[in-house]
Image (tube, rainbow over all chains, first blue to last red; front, side, top):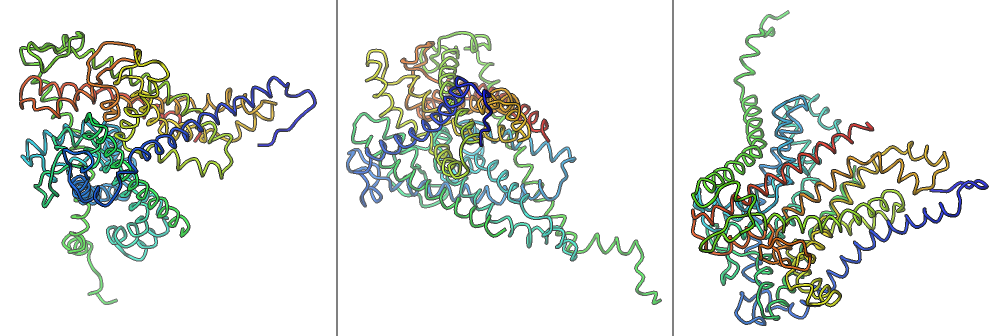
Length: 291
Length: 315
């Protein structure tokens, strides 16, 4: 913003104070950026030597330099697929209900809305205990891929609902009103106009939920997933481990070799997350251009 | 007029009520309502599960509510056991306060820079960096704290003052983790203050700093406070970073160089061990989690109230 200067208007002391404040604010954001760079650089340096073909194709091992992430990588994939398959239809349907079929005056709908907002703030470890009591014990799914996937589905559900609602809200009223005026029913309008138009936003939400679920450790520890496993899941009832749990396990071991393996697994994990987030950014940018 | 074209109101209603289309519309609506209702079911399940086991815990002869919340001897898996949760609470408090010392000033300063000073291009470049910072899994922060930040702190302050596991290291990374949340919410609150107020301040001869300090920040205050509360709530629930970096030692201390145990770290510790199902030690999991849930839920509700207040202020 331009400063208009009047003779004798702003004293040098006030001007200095103003400059100083701007610098302090800049240092604030600079610190955050520097922290990110130091973090990525130092973890990358620890782990980069361990990244090779064998690291992806070997199981966990007693010997640090033979240990790999095959089981945890596939485990992560299985659990996330289950979580997404369960959470996305439920979440999108809930978003449609809240955005299309109720008014803000509807008491029940605003109660549900408030509840979703509050659920989003529940610590992930609490979802882990819910998963333990509900899926592992009450439904006796044991420590299976299904139990882990359902726990993560509950965890990401609020996020999917909120993001889908935003996407649906952004669909121009013209589309829905045009469709209704031509005689389509409400649900025909939802399926043929609203959801296709909201799709980029919903996909962005799904990608963000995948990256959230992929990084979660605590709820899966709580439901009792074990970190040392020498098999790839072959069904919903298989035992599993996931990448973050493997990282945790290796980090807690005394041998330094395992710490480097943990760092290498972090490179893989963060690499995948960055890819997912860039995909989300690209989709968002492209859909904004279209409208 | 041909009478056969006149459809009576009753007949129309009848046809509508029983048409396949109408049935399908109703079915879809019902299913979508059920999906939305799932979230309510989840909340009630959490309350039910935590509540049931917590009641079972307090019914056991080993412990009273008073003892649980006021005594400092926390050894649930030892014989004889101790069920005083105060060490976990002070541990959590240490992490929360420490992380707030990092996240509040840095987050607010970043938000002011982004909202008031940064050119649009700079803003566009910096925002994704904050998003990445927010998206990095907490286990990664834990690794960084344990193997890089703690050695650094030990070399600066002396290995005799900073233990291998210490509260400071965990608190700092939790602070960095919650910083993007503070920045993004403060940014929203600051940009919601109308331009006209800023221009009024400038027209009266204020510098940028004076405008921000006396006009913008007071206008955005409830949103800013809400962001601090949400950051605190996030820090209380934070698990893996503090489990890795700050240790598993229930310890009533306010020395940031010492190892501690937070409520969340305790839940991880017990979950990893093989505590028999249904034992009092196992029930502590749920009692601790219920405490955690109650605190974070209350903070979130409070923050939401404050956001709503500032939302209505300028619209």
